[in-house]
Amino acid sequence: MQTFIKDLSKHVGEEVVLKGWLNNIRSSGSIAFLELRDGNGFIQCVANKKELAEDVWNLVENSTQESSIIVTGKVTQHPKKTDVFELQITKYQLVQQAIDYPIGNKEHGPEFLMDNRHLWLRSKKQWAILRIRHLVKAGLQDYFNNQGYIELDTPIFTPTSCEGTTDLFEVNYFDRKAYLTQNGQLYLEAMCMAFGRVYDLCPNFRAEKSKTRKHLTEFWSLNPEIAFIEHEESLKIQEASIKHVVKYVLEHGGEELALLERDLSELQAVVEKPFVHYEYGDAIAELKKRGSSIEYGKDLGAEDEELLTNDSDVPVIVKNWPKDIKPFYMKKHPIDSKLVLNADVLASRGFGEIIGGSQREDDYEIILQNIKSAGLQVDIFEWYLDLRKYGSVPHCGFGIGIERVTRWIAGIHHIRETSAFPRMLNRIEP
Ligand code: 4AD
Ligand code: MG
View 1 (cartoon, rainbow, N blue to C red):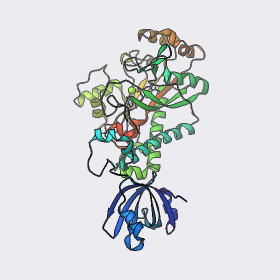
View 2: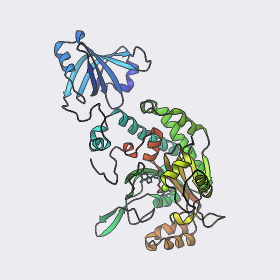
View 3: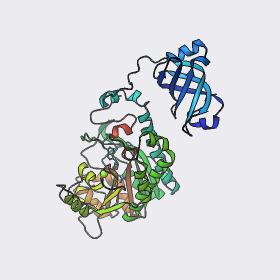
View 4: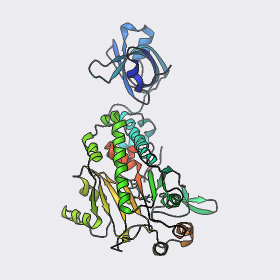
């Protein structure tokens, strides 16, 4: 029967069967150390020439990296480390011998690794990052499920844009044009009027020509949409959900974070300390003080986001931005009509925006006017306008970028490593 590496602590002293791949092998001629990975962990297996039949020893010694193997052996405690185990090999079976595995222990350039992404996924660092991605999704779902939200899915094919018309992917939809969704928000607004509190966890597509360390053309976001709350309450929910997911990864991803050498005290601070808030105008003033050439009325560039958060060990919320640079659906600020009730949450230590959200305009006449001034086709939005005709209520929502949050929590330089098969401006393969 197969045992998994993660369960070995329960089998110390017993003989078990492990099935996996050979990550690495070192041999001195009389003793060989094999690093086996089975998908959920890594373990050192020890083969002793003296204790093995000659044909078994020969098989072990001639094994190659990434060969698939089945090993039987006794589980022992690592001589020095308490929660580390080893396997003393008694039987060894080669499932398939891998010849000339292209990714070795030497340094490879990122383009080579990306071309071999289907194999690169097997390496330790990628293993750790993508398992953290899994925990990010699970941790966020855990938070919202426990707060009484229901998860619904929004469509991928859409007849119109949500976040502006410049970065849409157009597709042929029978005899008409359609677009891959930029974000499911408009549909979530309809859903929240039916279910109160909802979220989706869906892919989003943006034909962004930006070649940065933070942009994918296909990414996933989790979008809560909540009826009967106002902007400041939404910000509290955003903070609570981020604190929860960081805590969740700390609790369930200790091995992965250690492998990535992530500074845990930084993550602990996010859980414990309140987030910093700036009004948009104050953020601009602060940025100018710190040497940025940004002007009031402009979007924050990547450098500005870094400048504002580099010295912060908690996320920074920048709220209430000028209406002119924001989408049509955001609610007008009650005191200053040139502003809207929105916010970006910027991750700590320069990792940039992780959440974008807002209170939604719930007034029929105002949002109709906004749609017209944005140059959008009113008839396509009839159904959306209905939400303001029949039982309109204050409501808010926000989108949490899964890869952005993973990149930040895992402490990864480039977003491409947070997606199993990332899609970017210059890459759609493998
Ligand atoms: O800020 P965005 O564009 O907001 C919206 O789409 C809203 N309709 C969401 C809502 O209110 N429900 O995107 C939300 C988040 C960003 O904060 C960022 O984390 C991520 O999605 N994101 C990207 N991640 C990777 N690559 C890209 N090109 C991204 N664009 C946005
Ligand atoms: Mg945004």
